[in-house]
Image (cartoon, rainbow, N blue to C red; front, side):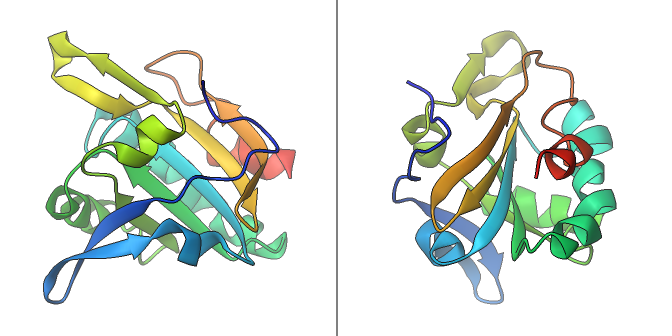
Length: 162
């Protein structure tokens, strides 16, 4: 069953590429006692993710800060090497968006947001969604209905909701 408003996020270990190679990131360290926006997407460099979803959060990052959001985090089911390249290509980190890898889709499955589309090579990928999390609890959740759209899960829609 998918995660809902009012639910506490499950414990999760994500990854990122550090100076010494891949490193683990405990999601609770990012969310406990903090107000964060998390958005997830099917994959780095994919059309809607690259041209619409990530740019929407880069455009709205300052607005989130003005509303007291401590961090904006993007999660994708890609390895940390791919996500590091995507971070650089999109300017995510420089624009204030933290990019984290869910390489085995463990977090994605734990929150019930996985899907597969074998014809395009997507196995256990993340649905497109965005959420506001306060102290580890989901306060706002926007799950995108269509696979190739970024409307209610985009930065502008999330910013308007909070």
